[in-house]
Amino acid sequence: MNIEISRVERFGVEDLFAGLRRVALHRRPLSLPYARADLTLLESYDADALQPAQLYVQRGELEKIAALAAALRAHEVDLYGLRGFVRFWTPEGPEDGMDLLPPVVECSREPAGPCIKLVNDGMHRVYSARKAGRPINVVYVAGVPDDTPYYAYPTPKGWAGVEEVDDISETLVKKNYRLEPHRSLYRDFNTAFRSATGFRPRTPAA
Image 1 (cartoon, rainbow, N blue to C red):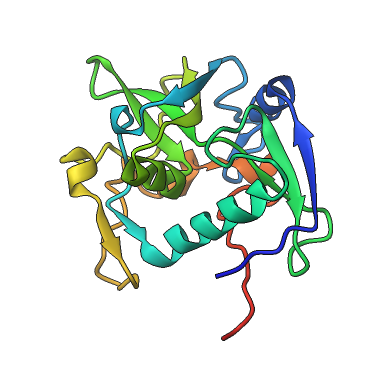
Image 2: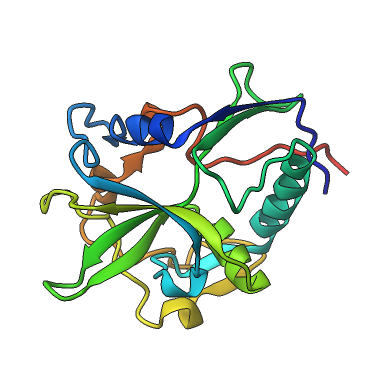
């Protein structure tokens, strides 16, 4: 798999944090869970020390992550070592580019216990870093309001409970949601960044 990147722009940690404070919940533009939270960039962090909320990863997405990492290296960008965020352009992508943030990890108490560093966004990157035995930069968010917790619970078995799959069937459970509709607590990163949520680089058909 090949991804061609034609252009890259770099943004620093201050720009990253300012954007995160503007992130709104899905269809709730006035609800900003990170507006007053404590934001910290954890550099070279042990992926094993993070807690997944998702019960599976797709092999195809892991392949895309590897291809994206290779394409970014050609522009001297380390996908696993972002300090701030990057905006990049591909021939098939949107004209205004796509933003790539470090994975976002939240302090989650389950319940009223010690803080668990729960992976919110960037699950496939954290998984691939862990699989490769390498550290990763992540944004750690603490102090999210009690009424807007992350929308899913941690996986009961940690990383041991995360399955690699080729395809997603209708019976496959993605996450254990705190409530329904769970989208009411979904952090929509696209409210503050460009095409940052659900990034799927398109590749030419075989």
